[in-house]
Image 1: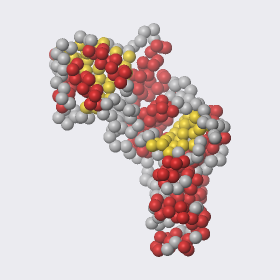
Image 2 (image 1 turned 30 degrees about the vertical axis):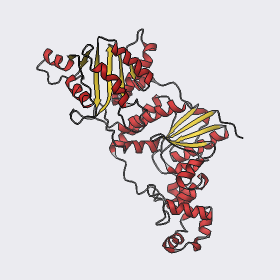
Image 3 (image 1 turned 90 degrees about the horizontal axis):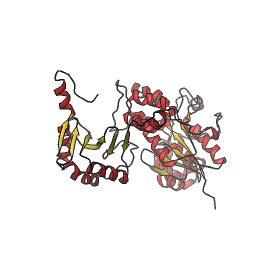
Image 4 (image 1 turned 135 degrees about the horizontal axis):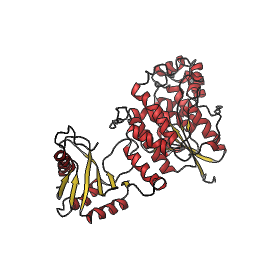
Length: 430
């Protein structure tokens, strides 16, 4: 019986996640100067969660480099059907790389070698050195790398694939994935396959004959139009197999010992988070570093994700004379807005955010919405406990749609700003 591996290497398919994050619905973020940032946000959020959940000894984030690879030499039309990368995606690549490196994560991007082949090569090295390997990817091609020591996780949806998972999903074994992909081809990479052969037919042929070579040897036994298509495809199937096969012996000039997360460059991260408008991460960074950089703590700002922390904050506002409250919603129109989070502050420099309805890819697990609102309702409806807000009338309307009548309103900073300077064109918090 094999002993469970004690050391873990996590390999992140950065290119796969970047494209999927860019096309994700429901997230539309931009920096203070209007640059798109939603793909950056999703990928970094996914990385943070992955590291928190897996706590690997070694890790690397791998991206495709610009330019051609050996596959273009084999087949010049490889990936030739892909449209040019959108400008608003291209503009997010450099800052994403900068943030990853500033976080102390090894970032690998090797000219002439695709990310898949780098990951395949590193997974083979790591396995030889006694590591278990977890590949974080949304790419089905990676299933061919799975074995008893190498597994996949799709961090976007938390789907996990071991050897049994691969066979259940694709109806072929992991060591047959190359054959399966060659028969189907891959339209996204412009790899030719047998016309009209999809996942079911490819899996059936492999189940019937055992391998691509056996399918080719027995092509005359397959009847009908699909059999004719197979026989017409025999000349290019070896090429399709080679294009679909991930290389595991590339000369990448790296060892597993180099794949270690080092201490983050907090100064660089602070500048990057500020430039691209990631205020919550900037607040977290300030909280983490303030004890090292300043004689006194600036403030404590928490994102509440556990019941224990929520109950601690609930007790705090119950026993306060007054607290600030703000709602995070999906619309500026309170009649259409849906509540996604609540901010609370009991004193200067001591605040929290309670996410309740965020739905972007890679979102951390949130508290139960109904139970949390039910627990907050008596405090929010108490006229004995004062409430402060910025345009708090809006927040009161939002709470009302949740069956909560906000009482004890004492101050509205937006109205106070107007009283102090009625000629100002803006009275927001910026």
